Length: 282
Image 1 (cartoon, helix red, strand yellow):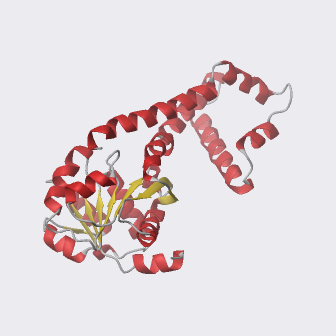
Image 2 (spheres, helix red, strand yellow; image 1 turned 180 degrees about the vertical axis):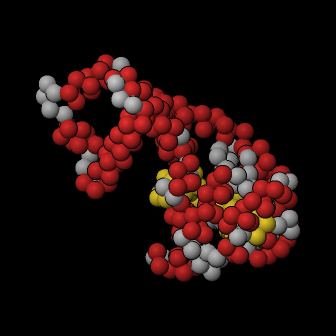
């Protein structure tokens, strides 16, 4: 299935969201802003927060509901966006309504498709997705993986939906914990770097405003250089680094403090923690 065919299918879908948190809102915002689906084909429900459902209705025009039977009857795709501790009970509630024709997409960290399949008790296609918080501005780095009964067509539909909030990579499910550590937690590492660079600029004599502006633009420019040139980061780094110059002096300090190793260990530890948190659900 090509992108055009996937888009055509997506535009005919009705989608039901179980959960109404920030990731769900980001997906709804992306889908409606890009006119992938009309707002009235999107249903949203949660455990008990009616005020939150009204807020999403007022902001995006979606349909809030407490009627799971109608939502499942109308929707071809159900997106699970509740907290991990609530997913088992939610699936137990859903199991009388879910059919093999439904596509279930989970954005719940750590919970494997096999567990969701078991709780639902239905041989329906399930896909796991791991977006990040940059989905709020349409720039998520999202990994998606197919469960046992999910086909290439199901993956194409999920990819189409999540492209509304950023970039999508299709991976194996066992790789999603790594993606959690790399791009799921990744924005926090970048913000920490910005804190350090901005603080150093201020310590050297710049105002906070100027230091922030230049730091953020530097990161943005470097990211665009990687995308536009397709060169290896090491090659681009060496092009900036003149022998005996300012960049080399700065990099030598980073190297002396084990900068690269610290980043590596942070991502590996976050990956390990993702596996630990998911262990009770496996």
